Amino acid sequence: MMSGSDRNPELPYPPHAPADVIAAREALAADVARVLASAGLPVREPDWETSRGPGFDIEVDKGDDAAGGVFVGWTASAQLGEQTGAALLAHEFTHPAIAFKGAVAEAMSAAALRILHAAGFRVVVSDDDLRAFDLDVQSGTVEGLGWTL
Image 1 (cartoon, one colour):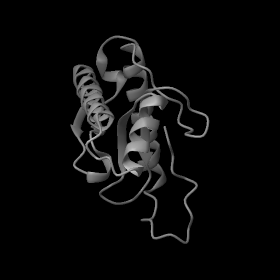
Image 2 (cartoon, helix red, strand yellow):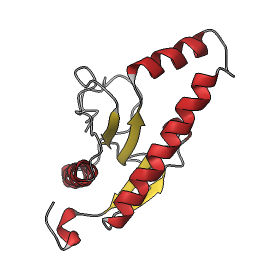
Image 3 (spheres, rainbow, N blue to C red):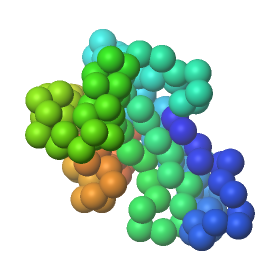
């Protein structure tokens, strides 16, 4: 769960939400991670510097604005990421790896959406253009499952 707490104060980021709101988002993110992991899906460590391999990233956006919240996105293999990155840098926008990576992200997002809905979470596909295929987790808790993860 990426925190975003190391933001440069000189950049025009929105202020952080109140501490109780951030704590609620972090608890929600932890529950989302537990649900996805219990379904057998890989959840990556929150530190992008040390996280390896494919899996779901769960981001806690601490902003006190409409973009703040808890978001879930899929990261494909490093090999696929390198291939699509190279294609984009070469302006090969129709490269098949790009379409494949998009199809994978869409499929994994749909799977996570169904799993989280089944666990009683309120989740929608993010409407933020910068979060293509990411999920916006709005509410839910493992306490409401009626069984233990």
